[in-house]
Image 1 (cartoon, rainbow, N blue to C red):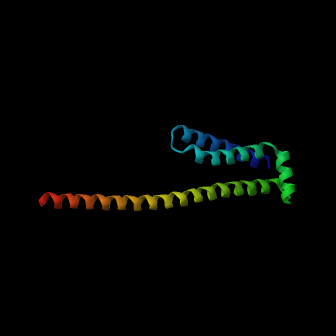
Image 2: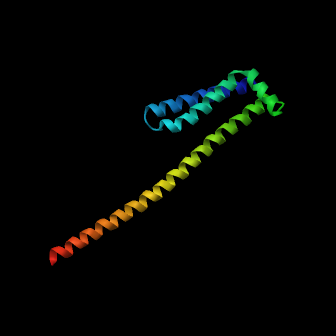
Image 3: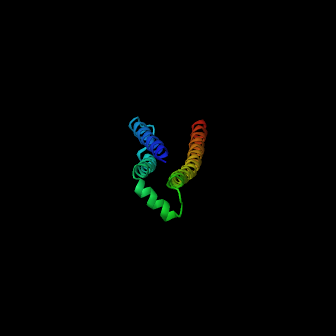
Length: 122
């Protein structure tokens, strides 16, 4: 189990480092990086405090702390993915609304150009 905890700690630290580097380079927005940082910090904390992991495993009724850690990791990342699905849905709806508004404005501009051409001919 110690090897699993070490691997999770290394992967969590790598995730935190990657998010911070991407944040610094402006490849990820701050509001989106918070979820990943929170998940990475939670996994790092759990992998370094075996007593807390054993307590959580007992609380969940899981005999093995390693299985509990995997379950917690899966749950954390599912929550992050769900949050991003909600954000993507909102962005898609906003994109559709914006596209419709641009089409309406384009139609109005073309109508005004047509009216100005007709008045200039008369």
